[in-house]
Image: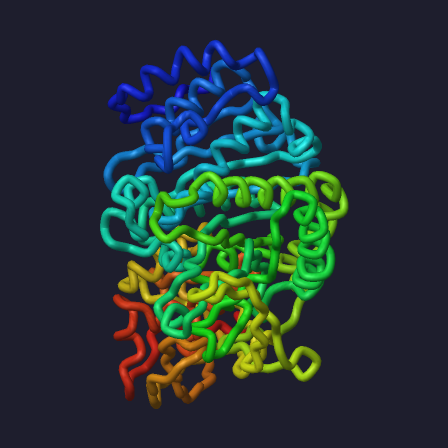
Length: 513
């Protein structure tokens, strides 16, 4: 029997009232089970406690899903994953199914994803939308950042932005999410967020964003172009068409500092949820729903649009489950077979595309309240890689770099401690220059190196990470000193880039038998 998750609960008066209401309603109708948000009066967000009471009771009454505790937040709240579509089965018994992982509320002040996840669980478990998980092994993490949510703040209890921690995995919340990801290795993932529609630069221009729901897909240059094209040309257009019937406008996710600044399609960064999983050739997406003037305002409509978008997403993949599973398995197989490009892109940015010179976005005039279209000429939709390196056999990491090794292990990357001296051709770097600059409108370190190749020895006690594993692209990106999204530029690791020093991690070019 599956062990019941341990929740640290202190029942509120609302929770006590909810239990008999839920018990009475489940089984009466496929749509008659109200969520805590639907029962609340006014714009009142669902607390962590009430979410857990509702989900646990829903599980007990319907048997429609299981609940696994995957970790614990800094303040001791259980992080849970709901599993639908393969209730009571081990992962190995459902290997023929498409695996889908959806997770919400990495940012505590973006609650509509969590509210939508609760409603989604209800609609699937009670049978109202059970078809969404037919042929799909579906995992749902309704809330990644419960501590931030309870405080109404973006970051977690340690003031960390969880969606900037998907490389070092230094927070327990993100580490738990990636532990789940590595365990199930889903074919498809979705990260649910909200975007601000009333940023200061927009308000200063007398405008509000009117972008509707936004969706982003794979963007890093090292990701499979087959999967990227499938996301752009198949998934997103079909979702857009389906959502029109639900009065939801879906557009590609745009990032900009203001109406007069550059517009681009999000980021190529691997330290966010979508791309950190897409580097394993998952079909990974994020959605950004429009938020409110306050965390609570208009939460019902925000939740409705998030819920309809998530359902359209699940419905697409349910209807194309076999095609998508075969597509992802084929592209993922190249990561371990070596049947992929020898070059790994380390530096990239968004650039203009002559075929798409401008972009039209929706806006609202603050003074008149009228909706209008704004044509953007500073549009940079294409990703251009400007520096790449050849993929080595592996890397030699001195054992004293314990935190580098720990990051690899938290990412599920296999490492090997050498037991005997091994002759090898190695390549070392000397750090010649480190120049602060910008890429993707963010601070970036432009690192100059001199490479030296020599015949040497991998010493006993050295730690080796070989590149012939599914994380092959991630390994190279993490460990190269010139990598835009690598470890070296991050706080705690930047000492490895001291000008005039030897970079402590060496590349393995070949090993002598």
